[in-house]
Length: 151
Image 1 (cartoon, one colour):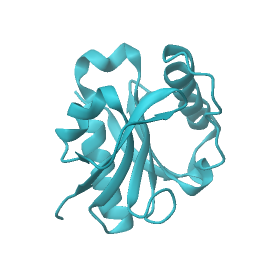
Image 2 (cartoon, helix red, strand yellow):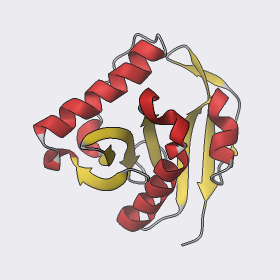
Image 3 (cartoon, helix red, strand yellow):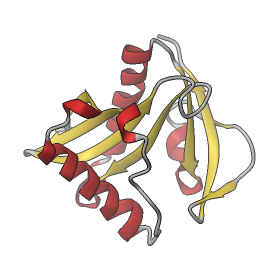
Image 4 (cartoon, helix red, strand yellow):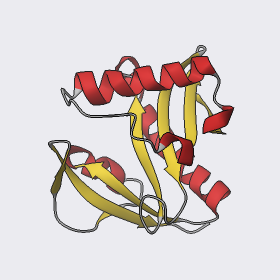
């Protein structure tokens, strides 16, 4: 069973949903990755939020941005699965739902991401290819990747 996915604008998130999203992002991007940085970056109100729920709890999440906001293309960011559920391979379902969300809400299949280098093969399995050299973002090796998928 995969999570139930839904997409909401920032102002449509309930307070409990927002709390769970920020808690999950902090758990993974700050604590687990031992990376002290400002996760609340002033961009949440510009994004669509893809929430993956299981048993009433948000366990998967991404932010979706329209073309021209983050990159020239649409983009997917803050890709995260709760550590308690990673053994279920829900990351693939999350990426599929995110790509579908970009197509549905922004009418495009051109997507650019800033990917953590160790996840390169994962993103390649979803049609992304490396676009440029490795760089550090918050002291973590990243690469820019893009995908152009048909509707």
